[in-house]
Image (cartoon, rainbow, N blue to C red; front, side, top):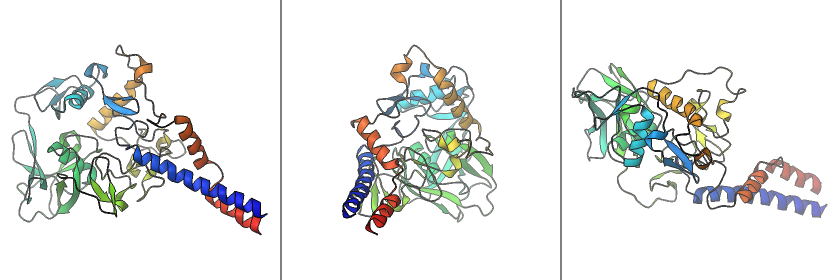
Length: 357
């Protein structure tokens, strides 16, 4: 009986160590939003060797609505513009349709102590500057705003503040971003009459520092509070705080690939988890409507991608989402099997308890 207890205890310890080892391996592999072993690549990217790489524009679908970039170039569709921006890091999205001389979009920060913080405001088509409302504003929008302003790591923090006499118009803009955009012009936007509406303020990430013991070290060099990891919110700005999660906080959804996604992404007619459990028939009895035009355009491009050939062999550019770079894939599969096997920790302890009795 004692021998059985020892064997059971060893099995439990092995399971615990396997879980910890998998989590450790995940962390040292520095997974981010560009790791296609964890998440889907964006429609203007392709998965190569476990990483999302930029496509060239001709690999995008030909159909779609024309769009205009900030360098006044008209593209056949959104995917082509984004693939070129991905390669050259210039010419961001400005507006839908062909370019016109009077079209413009300029983002800035007001009432801040430094150039990297302030209330977010936009000047559209050379008109009067208008602030972004606090309604619907969060870290997704803050990260996009900071990228738009030239801070590639996104935002350190965001908050909602009272106008305090700074409001220039009777309106403000409400943005709804996905978080992967590089310009607030890409996000769904509506105009609101503010009345008592708070305004969106951001502090963009400017300098790296040494993280304290109670902080999480993001792959891009940012430090965030540990309690902000695995909550479905991309606080790091590169998603590294959401891709090695054994469980999820704050009501976010846990994918089988150990990625936490926002609960708003469930049953939205788009697969976000690699194995599609966020859109399962059991979970999604009542499906929700999609977002506005650009989000629908991105989904349409994503849907068309499996049909593309464009002179590139599919076997060379297909998504390889199960190969772990630098680690023996068979070993990882074995460890994953151990982790998810029917012998849970509770079963182990019950086994030990009953063998002792």
